[in-house]
Image (cartoon, rainbow, N blue to C red; front, side):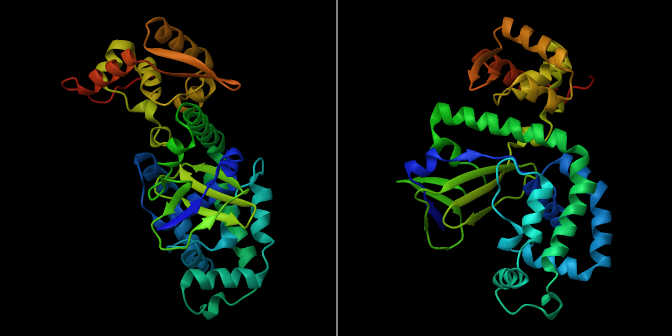
Length: 331
């Protein structure tokens, strides 16, 4: 297995980053694989994958580039630069475009584990990769980026709150399949037999993405290492719509949706982004749930986070287990 030695100094410099480029990269991997992690992803694939497949059929070089660099067990390093806080998509993809052609070819050779096919022995690979990612961003990601960003930010806030409650080990232990905190300053990053890396003094960056079946690690030695991980499935799957019918009948579907989501601590603005409800409506639901003792609130930095109380947990579990409990409908 591959693992990193992460000491206290590195953990002190660790931070979460929302990266538009990594969201686009994850969506490109999802388009390439064509395997959805939940019904929302299936609907997205049904909408956008036909155009992607036509694009790949019309450009065999780009198709082979994606298959070699993102479709196997190891990503080409030049395609997955480490996230940088505050970097927009255009600035991020410019880093890929600026890759030296010989570096791109060398990275693909590593991915393939053998000679580079003649069709990929060319100097325009970074530009082709940047153009393809720009197309994915423009057509399939940017139209709903505001909502995606709010979902990712909600995940960051929830995990940051978890750090304050249980420490970094609790958060690092379940970022993505294959990632596990081993103790003794060791973070398992995958199940591959790679030699360990010592991250003393480096930055450890954690970047969520919405596609649920994807994630990877990246680094720029010795300064920066990153784990790109799927955000909480409840958030990515628009959990507000998956409300037990019995709970919806008791509280009303919209209020029940808020209570259902609060198994993960969230702020008012994040609930607005995930549920699609108006700010005033979410605020009223939270006041009612607070007065009923079903949720509680506490401050985490500049944010006020809401989460279910034990009474709220019992109510949600009882609603889910009620005879005939299905999905609530309605606004």
